[in-house]
Image (cartoon, rainbow, N blue to C red; front, side, top):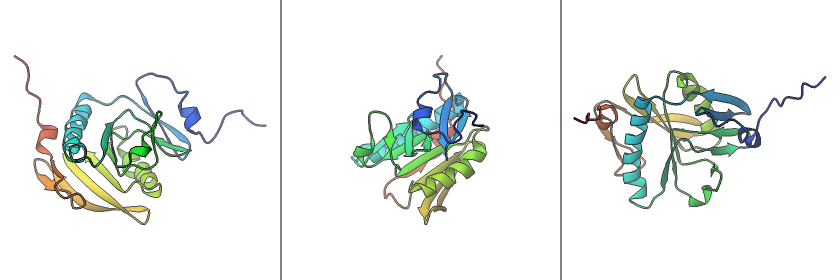
Length: 187
């Protein structure tokens, strides 16, 4: 006898999740719920976003988005990467980023660490996300991957406090020191 519950969810189902400050994502139709990120996570995201905007937006190459923004990779794969770079303006619709962005970035949290490294990496590669970056908060490291044949290969690893130029984007220098430097306290 049918239970009445769907086993594989889609974007329509995701649109009916509560507005409760949590992040809801679909991977292969399965629902994943994540608590709101920590202030440290958000600080790192904001500071990395500024570096990406200085490269992609100031050169007119693309646009950088930060979470929460839905990225619809397939009817059953809707994610909210921490940062996304879109080169094709036509992918930005009234509801979401539609299709694979050129770059998705996940900042590891204790609750997402395994999912980001495994399930998300596998789905991103299979669904056409050309570049995937992981920011390892505990290791103070940025890992940059490039898609090749539906899998990712490492192209760059940068550790705090170093900087490095990405091999696929000449002039894109990512500096890790600002990501982990504490903000000055007001007096």
